[in-house]
Length: 212
Image (cartoon, rainbow, N blue to C red; front, top):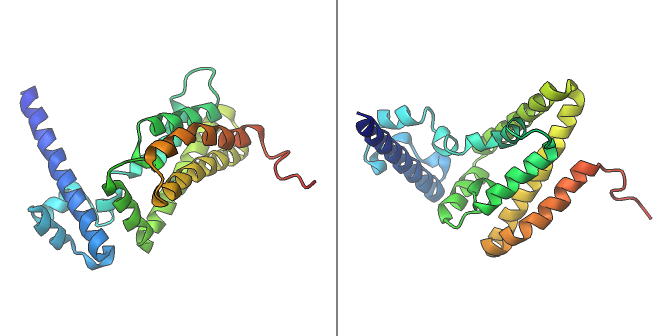
């Protein structure tokens, strides 16, 4: 019975991934607004109802598989071991994702990951959803910090700084990849860049950009 359930789950996952990849391919080729759900269903060889069973909305066809990553920072803080600071937790998680060449930090050799980013960047409604999801991720991080410190104001400031540092590092990865740099070179430089970025958060802005 367990083996049968495992097989069913694998088949469901395979179907979901086929629909997902088909949808992103069509969006990249024709534009998000120019592709219907029926067209996606036909190309993926499933019914329109099946598409909606796996993905509740057309936007979910892009976001469902990646949206969980907007909560990465809050998870890093909530799951960190005793004695580890929030900055250390976020930095450690970021470097682990770099080591694994995770698409969520702009590192993946497969062109499909860049295709997903391109669809989002070229579609205003998806950009808005990405912005709102990122904002929610920052609020969740602030809530996690406030639970421990009891100070929501400072937690919100800290969450914004941590999120901004991580986002800037990810954008740098995308910028370099789009410029033709190898992922190995980008990943090799990531620890040094992460150290500088999170040190700025850790030590504050007291001496930053002091005019001589």
